[in-house]
Length: 409
Image 1 (cartoon, helix red, strand yellow):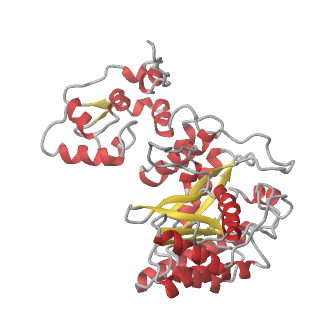
Image 2 (cartoon, helix red, strand yellow):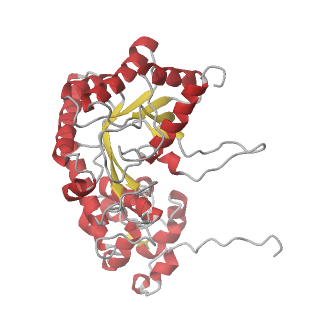
Image 3 (cartoon, one colour):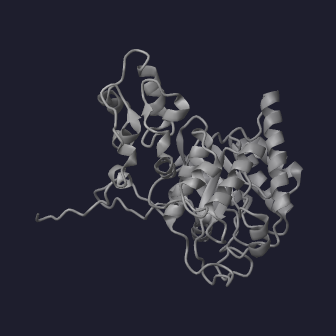
């Protein structure tokens, strides 16, 4: 890389890769920094290369950068807002194309995640991002994955053009409510954002029907949590509405991260990182396990999820009258609500019980979560007696806090 990238371009890359780390759409950049060193293998960095999953389940490495961190907007929570005193840089279209091709040829990446601050106008910014994707596809025959973060205020025609070249398009909702958006990002309009999502949904659906290419991996969005007082329940209600109305592939949750020289309207401390994790687990229950937002929220208190245990276990502990469920006769919808049983394990159980009555040892072979599931299950050789009535059930089914072993014990 050093032989082909000049110092000026490398300096831009350091600034604009670091500026992109706040986007949660590529979550691996949130991992702790690790280095394989001289004898190990693999490292993580705060920004630059991230990973994403394609529709067929492949994990691909993406170059994750901003086109520029100059921005016309002054969103209070954003490190790149126009009043922020950060170092600024801007790539040209050709520079992003060159970086992508150079990194791809060296097998560093398999695709590009490109976002941007707003420069000159939303149309100008969107056009430059679209030109990057177009040049990669048309001029270089680039077949790798491309994810473009679109600008909701941009012309629908430009977004239409972007969808011809990108695999996935996304529009950041930013904050879960119009009230919060008005307070922390008054130059952004929630109605405009949702209108753009609606137009995107229609284009994607039309393209599928007509069997032509337009953002084949669908659309996604990102919501910042912890920058305002919105509860987890309200965040999840917003997500459920987005999935229903706009057919989103994913809602990404980004825990608010304090930035240099923060606005006084922002909280001093970030929310617990565990909150972000619990929201992802709750989102999974919404999309794949048939839970409603009200059911998930009922597992916590005051509209906030229980940070100590996952939302599925929290719900089960507050709805003990629904258990135990018989693995040999229970309906799939009920088995999916058993803590410790994932969708794949439930499908295996249903398949296996067609041939024999299942015992606990059979469930153990079909699921790695038997310890958590055991109090909530009936099997051919297991019928828990009043186990779900125990006051210490939560402690029984949660893993003990790992303790560092002594070298000299």
